[in-house]
Length: 273
Image 1 (spheres, rainbow, N blue to C red):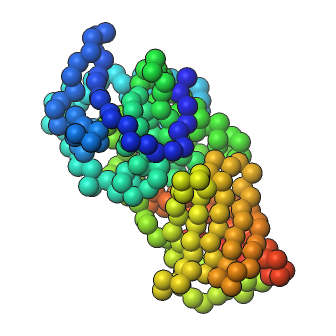
Image 2 (image 1 turned 30 degrees about the horizontal axis):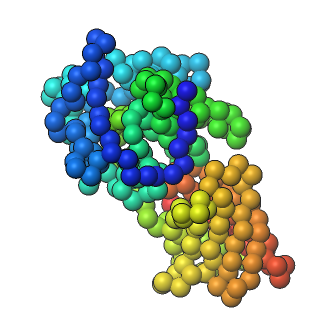
Image 3 (image 1 turned 180 degrees about the horizontal axis):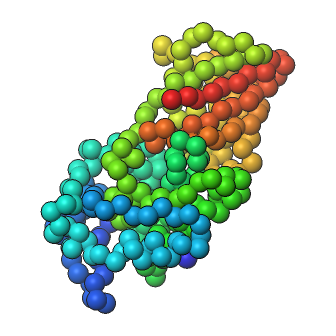
């Protein structure tokens, strides 16, 4: 059984592919550099089918692993992609976690991403196979969608190991997203940007600012399913509230936040493409 990983850590990665029961070396271009980071990926031309329910997870995982990496590398239709073309893997906390984690591993995102706010990174234990981890990641995705009541969403394998299964646009990452602030129903005309960070203490911090001046910082525990948040405004006022995930935009989770300040002012912060 695979498990979700929530932290990124510097692990030396050694990629091998299993073919006909024997360990086969992966093409040299896919081997990690001395620091353990793979800087070249394979992007096969053929897309995997979307997973419509947990029932088809094992079948899609089998399809994903039916062709060895050596065979994929030898196909003319397979694109070789450099790490510096994949902003998601070096700019986002989740991307760095995937990049640095040991295999077997898989990255799955709900589809359509703009309206389905679920993403799963799964890493297997030592005895796990790649097919098991892919299937588990898909099941985790469907479990999360069911818990959120998202009935119209599918799950898509973005990557497993150094193999990319989604269009390169899926690996973009927007450091800043536009944000709007409403106070007691009135739109603040200032144009804000929101930047998210995962701190070493395991907390998510969303900093909303304009022209380098922070307006509010919103914080919530990583992996917290209660969707409750706390916030502090530039004037020092504290607030509590909730968040509502919406979907993904260029690798970023789009959310709205409903806050009540200690002075009674109600504030909404909306991230928008």
